[in-house]
Every structure is written in structure tokens, then in C-alpha cells.
Length: 392
Image (cartoon, rainbow, N blue to C red):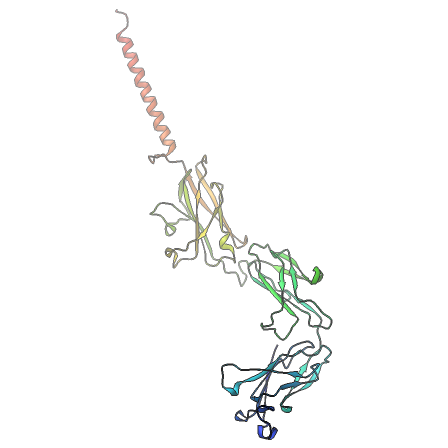
């Protein structure tokens, strides 16, 4: 935890340097009542940590310096000026506490033009052994969630400028680096990095290995991954389907039926699935399978305006295999990493002819017509035989 500590030096400019001019030294801004000293990181420090020092209200061109037993030497602050009134100009530095500093409270003194203009204290705690963090104890990660890892080795003798974390649960090694502009700027040896766990990672406990320069193993931690299930507080799946609708212009998702939809052999049917909150990354993996289909069917998100107001819906066309017998066939959709499995029944009928007459009926009609023609020809032949036969 970083704290900001502000101190107001109530010593007026006239009392400090009656003879200093702008070219000779710096003066306290008595127009604002004195010099403002802000220490960010004044508490909860460790040896090697940075302390942000900001001094405002000092005028002139003389050096502004800070000294404390926690710093190896006196620190000269750099002047800065933002687009603000002159009274808000300041001097700034981020010196590091000496690695040899012992726990305790130490004075800190600000000088401008050689005169003391502000004082404060810096608290220093004990050093802490290097620590690799993957998750909190007992924490379970979900597939598709963001995982952040950190390595804190602010400890005497530690080296290295970047580290890597590897795991069978990761698609590639993750680089851990220091971000000097991030929230942990005060720890120059805090290395962090993260990744989105693959949505397809299976439930289990995985080893996460931290490696340093040259691939040397530094530490290892367990990572528990388990997808949310019905009953878990973070389970949000509300899956419905599969349902079926035709491919004609008059059909559509709003006409889908979960039972009783028929499709002829060799025909095409659309498979519909609804889910208010798929697992992360699942939208690209939803698939419907059936022994009646020529191949598994990817279900794609319906992005049309017609889908507004409905649960997020996904559908895709399925081709019915040729040579399939008539009957009812299961259609299965598995989602939420196997926790949701729903099966619908699709009725397959005989193949249709171009005229719309079912194939088996067409065959019956053709056979009957053929038999009738054959019988007709036979009758004509018999009649002719009787007429042309020998006289009685």
C-alpha cells in the first residue's frame, strides 16, 4: 500500500533568506504560506523501494535537495512546470531507499538554496523474501478468465530484468516485466504479466513455472482451473434448444420448433440454439451433431436486427445424409465446457421428387402404371389371337 504524506513548511521566505536573489538561490513561496512537501510512499517501504518526492512553492534557480539516512547520498530534485500558475511549479525525484537500511523511522529534510524549508519522516519496514504469485490460496480460475501473475524479488542480491511463466494451461510462455508507470512504480523489482486462459482449457490443476535468465527455474505454483457449473455463484448459462426451422423465405428462427419438425432425406434444416451468457470464447465453438447430418454443424451468432429482443441466438444449416432411413434422429449441442448437453429430436422423412411427391410414392405410382399397361397389352394380344384363330 502506498500513502501520500503532505507537509507544509510554515517558514516564510523573509525569515529564511533575506539576501537571496533569483540567481543566487531558491525561496519559499510565502504567497501560499510556505513550501508544500508531498511524499508518496512514505510508509510501508522496504529497502530498495522508491519514494516519490514532490516539492511545490519554491521559487528561484537554486538547487532543491533532499537528504535522509535512508538514501545513500543527497538527492537533487528536478524542476518541472506544467501549464499552471507559477505558484504550482515544483521539483520532483524518486530516489531508492538503500538496500542496507534497517527497519525504523528516519528523518527527511528538504533544502532550498542551502536552507531547510521542509521536514518529514520516512518509515522503512523489513526486507521480504522473493515471492511468486499466481492466484490467491484456494482461488479457482475459470476457462477464458484473465490471469495475472507477479514476481516480487525486492531483496538484497536479486538480479534479472525479465522473467517468464510457463504452464501446460498456457498457449505460450508469458513474459513478466516491470511497469515503471503502473500502480506498483515504487517497487522497481516487481515483475508482472498476464493472459486470458484458453476457453478450451480442461478442468484440472496445472503447474506454473517461473524461469529467470538462461531459463533457470526460479519457482513454481499450482493453478486450479474449473469451469462454472449450475449452482455455482458465477454460473450464468441459460441455454435453450436445439430447435429447428426450414430454409424457405417464409421460415426463420422465430418459427423454430423444438419438436415435430420434419425434413426429407437429402434436405437441409437449420439448427437453432439460444444462450443468454455463453462461456468466454464459446461463441466460436458451438456445434450441433447428429447421426442424421452429413457433418457437424457450426452454430454462428445471429447478428441481424431480427434477433433484437431475443436471447443471443446461434444457428447453422445441416444437410441430411442421403440413403438415410425414415425416423426420428437425435441432434446434440454441448456447451459450457460439457456442463450443458441438450438433445432434440428431428424427424426425417423419405426423399421428395422434383414434383413434390415422396420418392417411395413415386415408385409405387410408376410400378402400378407399368403393371396396368402390361395387363392392357396382354388383353389386346389375347383378343387378336381369338379373332385370327382357325375356323370352327
